[in-house]
Length: 416
Image 1: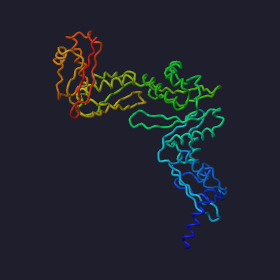
Image 2 (image 1 turned 90 degrees about the vertical axis):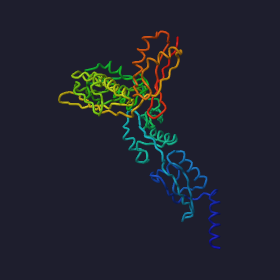
Image 3 (image 1 turned 30 degrees about the vertical axis):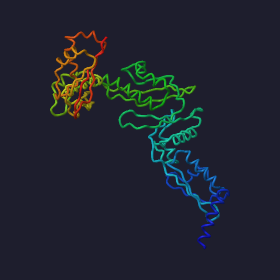
Image 4 (image 1 turned 180 degrees about the vertical axis):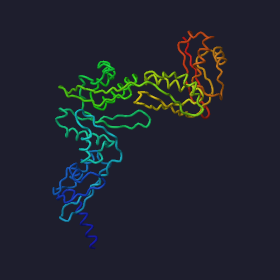
């Protein structure tokens, strides 16, 4: 009977709790790295304040709306002082995005440290949900105050399109500060006007963030210098000076370094037609090591190998810089990939007579080594006997054939 009485007391207590307020005696927090104080602040709860079930539901809802937890649930029971003992179960989010803070004029590392002191999971990462990202944006906005000059902080999703690329979140002011001037210091090889012309128009017009501008500098200015053999070029600092009207003037410092000439080129790999490869590449040894020209030569270098059936063969050049001599040597290992054979020829758009003539000239037979560049030889031979002016256009495509590592060619002609 005593046990039954206690059960009824507990039931009556819970029924009464739905409408009656009692002091919040204690709170236990489970599942999160956040401190209890931070969780209580987010929930809007205070030890000693009167609460009822509606208040607990509201606190649970506030926690859920932050997006900072995987889920939110709670339970409560009578406390020793006839108040409530509340337990909040708030596991940290299981899915996080990498994140950057792209707010001009602030130290992003210091901001991440500030965030992580209160919210340990926010260490260059944020919850992979919109509510959590908006929560972080609001916290940054509140913390930075006057720095933003009344502008809001927004969370922008950045998706990497390359294989294996992961989405990330960038926190930026909205709108971004306008770039009103671009300056350079330390240069002599290129003029300021030439350098500014290398910064893409969309980067200049979309507004300023340190990360975006530095990426544009590294991609575009470095390439221009490496075309002049200047492989040790550095951009030690990029500074944005705040101007009136939510705008900035940007200054990039440059250390150009010495010019390098092209030295030895070594091809690494077994059973490679090295002589044919070097002949196709036409490296300009002893001349200024123009990296764009060198890359074009490496692409030409691949062609003889690809014509041997290694359609996916790819060179992976490695630079060796000799600073004492200002010479660039290159080692080129090869990844041959799978070996392919030729399957069949399909022709679209020719009359029966012309198709028969084309097949007579085409001498790549099924089962032969797949020569991806063979159509380059075929078309001149075909058009020596057929007037090409009767065609509006013609092209060739490659398709996977039947069988393992088999490729087909499809020739398409469009008559005028």
